[in-house]
Image (cartoon, rainbow, N blue to C red; front, side, top):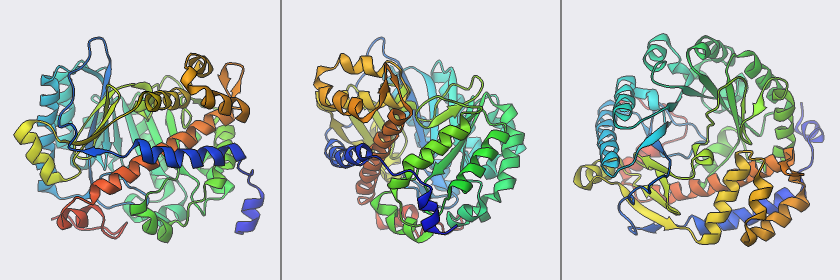
Length: 437
């Protein structure tokens, strides 16, 4: 299909989306300008508050061209040293009095050294009254030995697939690493029965992704046996802008609304929306974005974020500095940003909307400081009565897209402080596989 024919089938993006994107692009830059060295440890937990624990494992066998998370090329000994420091930070967090009932392990590729990951989970279960653990992985780790080690430790396993289309997989440098779309699909089918929830992470709005390609992806999701799927819009950051353009093409957010409608229509036959971009069937209730269901959370690991008492804390992105700081003082926090009262209310609103909370309009009525946001969303058609409309859910996707783009900019700034050696491991030619040392 020619590009002109593809665009002719897409619904034009509403003006309200463009207005919201423009406002958020400016606002997130203001809100997410961190103050280095302004706080060097977490505050004590507040009585009666529930917190979620996030653990970051930043190692990958190769780097995807679209990803701007804190990640490094896998090196076995550095990875083992890192896991040791991560366990120490977890113990220090327990010493502060934090108790978690939910844990999310992300990356990078958390399963890159499965024995070390198992130790992390077992330690967390010994320190905290965990009810649920969610962990990310890649399709090549959906093997019986890995599954057997995870199935009684992890309730929700999230697999990064992005697309089942072989052409897109090749553009993303994932075909040679993880196999064809059909091979990945078979691995998901065989793994899904072993977990309470197996989530398939997908991306939409690739420049060369036609509606037909997206619909075929959706049909495969439905047939996969997976209990959950998450569809993120393709996001970018300055650090990966060139590699992204050279691999998959230039991102055009004007296509998002149309493609989002296709996702909702196709998945609506068997799945229910659990959040604005997560869809579920059955009882798999954990969602991908823990920040939407956890008002406050503690992040451990290099490059991890924490949100406590209205303040955003960021750990160092340097692996060497991370291990040094944890061993010396038990904390790797190097920067923070205390939100204003209005910024906190806007952040809370974004989470309420994203979590598809049908009391969102009631929440707005109780927040006179957000009268302008309430008026804008009402005029844009975000509500029908007290409930969010589909377009209201899409506007929350736009909010999250711009928020995470702002977070990506924070990551880019943090990477500037890395040593040349660490920068080479964090930002080599995107997609090139580097043999581990």
